[in-house]
Length: 409
Ligand code: NIG
Ligand code: FE
Image (cartoon, rainbow, N blue to C red; front, side, top):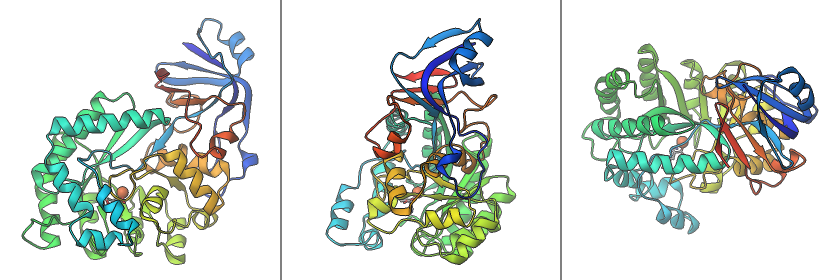
């Protein structure tokens, strides 16, 4: 057993609702607190002196400087396993070309597919782990990672195996998601439906046999797969026992209704969700995951985060880190920026990158500092937790713990 502290403030995010708006007054904190951990879990959180008295046999991990403690952040949507970069696309966008125009002229997702196919499984694992290291420095203790940049049976399996081996080596939890249905590859000779059937018949069984991942995603959009195609794919994946998530409503609405129909864990993007989509998401258990990094990267509108919360959705904010639409890959900065445009309270932002983000991954064992939850937490060197959002990512974590062990600083 170990007692870690003292901390100037501990923001537990305990006992807060899963859905709907949150006021900053709901964000209670413990002053001069400590945290007791054992067997990778939280045992107790409370006043440091009280914990010293009640857990006298604990080994002490003393925190010298003034720090505040929070649950580790969860990044519930990333594409951090990829080859090459898309700086050329970015330059074209700055010159006025749209994301879809660039995709049609040979850039876009397909350009990353070419660059990713050229990498070996080992190289992809190494790239993924390098990016994971950057996530750890940002305080992320659980990250989802998608395939979707090889778009052939062998290529997608190579990606999923690379992600699996990164998962086995990483000091944080990686949650793999199969995104073979990112778009129909340009070199596939057949219909969208035939490509989806190929994935269903030839990739799904191997994902299950080799335990490469139990989550399936699809990009439902004019430039990728239609609502009808998405409906078929998601229904089949669900029947075969996969958890679902959907790239939904990024440029046109439609995908979020499919996410609801097939009881996906989350509908992600939502930049073009309208009143109907927001109302339907609010009535469902689907987490509304918004990706401000893609709006910043593409220079387009943010998802209606305020409206989603006011309608009583469970709002998650994720980075969407990818080489095309969201190259920044900094969740805290993006969430802080989204908050200024969408008028999100600090409580709503912190919930959206901790316990509500865990919910988007179907995980209820993390995301708040509560006894029996995973001992995943991060500290910032400051005397007031509000500085974390206020400084928009300039203040980075001082220390990061995973399963009770310090993995950074
Ligand atoms: O989530 N929207 C589709 N997929 C990614 C972008 C992929 C890319 O441009 O490489 C996204 O934004
Ligand atoms: Fe994405």
